[in-house]
Image (cartoon, rainbow, N blue to C red; front, side, top):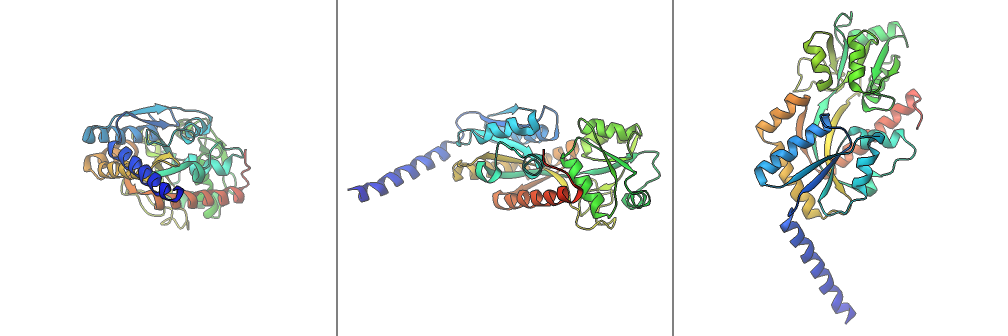
Length: 322
């Protein structure tokens, strides 16, 4: 009797799972964001969810939970019921930098999360004051080598993805520079505009106002190839800096154990939207980002490889875990 009963139980369970996926979503989907409104992750999440709502009629609530290095939003999602109604929008820092930087991270990507889709990917720009004698990345590298450890660079803080990308760029160039941490990306770019530091690495949204006001100029990007969003700027590879390919991606995640059919439904809806020309243009205009439709397996590999890459950079330049 017990042997006969087990297949019936499994069949009933599969039927219930399929029914849940078929009716999904039948209530609002909450998307947690580890940052305040207006930032790159928040903006990316809102563009995506607003378009899905427009095309499919699904309801979303974007829930901003800033602070504690992203631990609040990411930890809350990790502990949420895995039913597809609590998701996380996060970027490179939460999964490819934080586990390397902090000893006590209250979540584990492999244990706690399922990636749904990489939403967007954007290069970081290497920026100097508009009066700087450096006009491209090659000039900057030559300047750093001429004065080892004397040229200063600002960042949003020690261990930020901007900081790690800059350390990677400098080390790969065989040069040295002096790190000056600030409390956020905007102050770091303002420091360049005010000639407090020589250069910084930042996303396009934080650079654009200063660029338009001609307070700063862009020397290049931190990616291996030129970005289709900002094609005029030299890549790290073109500057003779081997192996550097640092960008800021934004992704959508679900708690581990979320039914595969629901994850697949979320991926399909997201991929359809992210392939639309008007959505592509929207991401390009607000963040210099390129939309992607990278799914679970390749996205997981990207996250894992970047974590190991930044771990090596941290060891190379002597950044200690906090």
